[in-house]
Length: 217
Length: 283
Image (tube, helix red, strand yellow):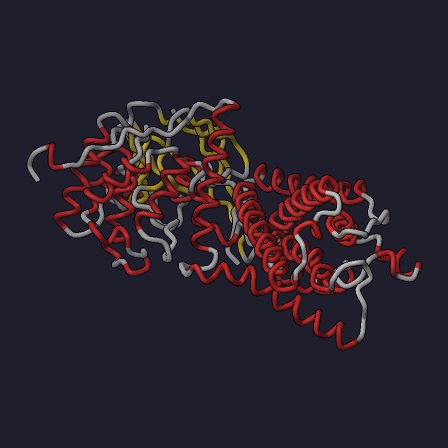
């Protein structure tokens, strides 16, 4: 379970402080997957970063009783000068995951083969995202966090991503931010709308979508 | 792509989530160790030649000042050779400086890694200092061996009093760590800190006693020089290393006082930044 209690988040902008979240209180219980709708700049990514623990709120409290993933497919931490296998080892170490197991899994699933031992800076965008997605699937989390994008690579690989992700979901929950209602319908049991720095949760996804549509127009 | 068995066996690793003291400590070590290994591969790019710079830099400076001092006709103020006199102060000085410089960019240079919530700026600083400590130990060994074969300086010529030396080296590590922690905190609240430090610290190269001992200074200069904790530090190390050089002009308490105050301020800033949910920025 993740609890957000009265979360405020402000940033120092060039022209004064920007108030992104203005008192978000919400509970993400085990067994339910939550989608968050919101316009660009509504603070969706900020909310996710607070959920995962990357950032701390300016005010308010986060209680996390589950292992929460990094945003699926996150590749920002890869050092270009290191090989795919070396980058993977760092993530294994900080999550206490078995390096051999994860390396075998990622090498096979990502279809990178010998490229695993080439520097990441030589990778194409597709190869990099395949590495990142495979790594996301190699550690068991109770909550998987998705920032807009789920799948990686070409159409065939994307299908493979969705399939393995569905397997992972059998024991885990999802929190995703998106402006695609279809994606939220596919993966979530509940949805909310982030608007004006506040998160409002709705019982059904359709209800959330209706509100979101009114906000957009 | 039709059957479940098309996927490789999934690893069963689940991250630790229970927040006990033991788990937190283990997690912190995992993170520091992982950061150290990662940094050891990225610091100088992929080329192994990169580490030679940790050796070449002090070696070149030592030789340059050796030549200058010889040409000026300046003798060595302690009963040893000019190279040992310079090395015993230059290597510790560079170690402290490197730790502090790397501390300044610990947050801004590792922003993507801070995405993983278990990676804290503190861990990055610790990893960097440990890596620098490992590097300096290797560099010292190479210098000692090289000077033995090039100039016939015996190994015992570096160990006047092993216990005093061990205490001094431990203090150097502690002092440099504290300095790096403060530097990392200042770097997070002031984007110009790294630049300011690199300029502001330049005079210290000439005023910290790399090129003189406190004892040979006229008393009016010495009264100023003893405000500099690094001068105490270098005097202490030389006093432990160089046979025939015993100084009582350094004050361990003064060094520990500086170190601990720097650590305290650094940690308080870190604590405040966390409490207000400060967002790190790249410079």
